[in-house]
Length: 226
Length: 226
DNA sequence: ACGTTCGTTTAACAAAAAATTAATATGGCT
DNA sequence: AGCCATATTAATTTTTTGTTAAACGAACGT
Image 1 (tube, chains in turn brown, orange, red, blue):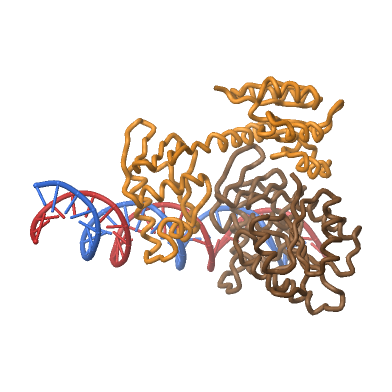
Image 2: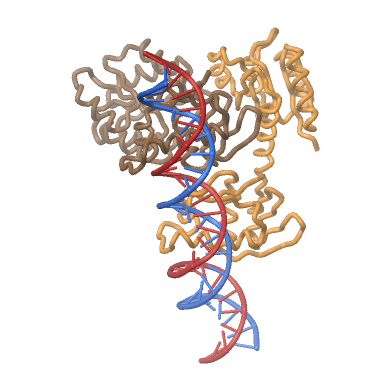
């Protein structure tokens, strides 16, 4: 099944360039000429990736990005912005709007294609489908807060324990400080002592095995894939 | 009637491992040692599921997958690839070839079996005909708001109780937050306290038994198929 | 039209589970 | 050994759900 890419740009030359190069790589491509139309197309086309210009009439890319990230059915879609090098201010705005990456104009076809290919390679490596994360032999399922272990047994984790495991597994092999875990899982208003995390980590390890979550003394915890 | 599985692999040891474990689980198993032979067997055997290696002589799995997905009589068959972790490039290729899922080598018998079982469970779960839902031994009948239990007894549920059960059963093994249940069953204008759901859930459990609806504390309720 | 039953909802309290804290043990490192 | 950070266990608090009862109103039968 071909991967789907939606390209949104008001410049028809660029649009054509993008469509041509991506189609050649066997992506299924659809297009739109402004943010509003883009969102409409996205809802029916359900692309895996959106490539979008920032400056557009009717609805600009920043605005469209915000809407996408606030729409339940679309928020998981990866968004890459096309931005002229000059307008660097936009980069900041773009990331605020939930940009996952960006490319600078002028577009170089080969660079574009290799970046897109790299994205899909990374995606399939991560194996995230509908909140089901497969990694290191585990199947971490957000649909029912369960973890299927390598031996096929299934265990359901309580909310916090699951959230910690899930979050760590989404950024494998990257150490997360206790502070950052608190931010991500508890939110901005933290009334909780950092040691609390240790206890949750212990419980998770108890349930799924010790080998998945590593400790880096003085730094934090990390989901290990090897 | 036993479910049919076709396994295709040129490594006879793996083939034997797969056949042994699947037969033990009462699947009807046939095998082939390359893609070409696999397709031939598939046409006469008409399996429900194909388990296939990628690297094979004569015709590799990718090629075979493409042919299967382009053959009218075979395209509905679910295909799971066996892939060595190292060859990640193949994953992309495999999905292009119409893979529905994949398993990484080395094969762990228990994980294999549980994955295959899970697949067939999901398949047979889809028993909805004209608002009659058969699942987990229950027959949930929207025509008359009745539920036939495993012992054959029939109970009629009041509207709200039935709607909750029915909705939960249409998305088995997925937690539904109280909020989402309110949306789905009461509609957008909510004059109701979330606790109300608890009471309905209790009444449903009282009538059909406790084992069907599970609670995930802090998250919501879930219809369990086991 | 009346009383009665049934379904829905709320409120109140009990029970259970989970989250958090505190206290103590362990282990690595200089 | 002594320090430091984490692991672990136990104890406590908080949160969430289970359960019961009761109020209310609509539907039903007579």
